Length: 406
Image 1: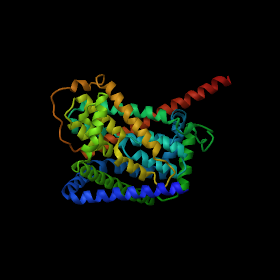
Image 2: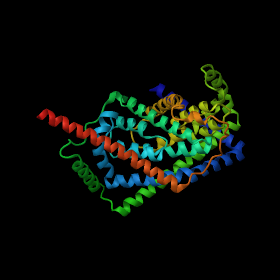
Image 3: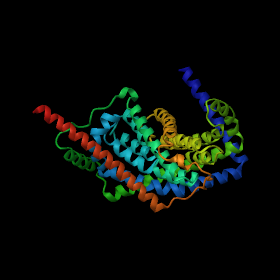
Image 4: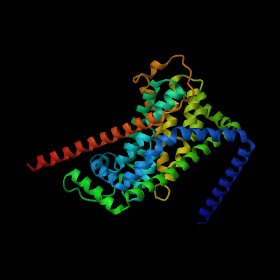
């Protein structure tokens, strides 16, 4: 008991000292802090806000209408045996693919609060569903930062192949334990899906106007928090860079990673990427290194996603019993696997053809209408694919049962 108290006291001392030092650093470099804060605000307002807000609101509305419960019944045949998560997790996966960090975590927290999954299932789901979106990887990173669209395909394919591997690994998390289905499967699967939707809607009982208002208010609060995280971590990263902390940390890492063949020039990009995904990706694109090494580093940074996103994830699951440690392990594993897959697929997917004298482009703004339209198509495609796979698995199961009965 005394040891626990001493540990808590030391942690409080360290946290207080770190906060004080950071405050002093911000006061010491007011111009840099202001510029970094403004950069973070522009990123949030121009890219993150229009990309995430509609999906955040619609996820809340669909939950209240019972649609997610119906989708969960339809996806149960594939999500439960393959990834050991309930069928409703398939909706979180599809939304995460479409709109990126941290919507997968947001939906997972909502599912856990509604008791639609156990703690262990939620921890598996958040590791699998919280991914980067293709528009960030292809539009912002490949085209906006590298100036090479071919790179985007390599990064995106590697990212999603790696996260599937992470999902399969995480199915063994907590011994692979699963809670039993909330209801025994009786009747046709579509009939059960519709019944689940009606039952969930009757339990909610909010009029649509109230449901819509609650969804918008909750979404705006979440978006403001995400914007604050982006701005604060942008400031943190700028301050530790101008204060020389980044160079101090990079020196020993350059020696260690250089010994295993990694280009030391990219160590600074990895340090920045460990804090904030966009700044780290841009730093990798601008590094004086060969294209393959820069793309591998960017792929790892995007998969890790940075402590800025991790802070957002922790906030999205706040108030639940979901632990963040398994999520951090999954993101580290995702980063390693994504980097290896990128290395292997660089030539086969055509990115090797982009090895030509072409300087990185400046960061480009993405058109809002194109962003929303493409994100919607990605969501529909991902959800339709999961539904088709689940229905095929369900049909095969019924055929097998009928065969043995004969």
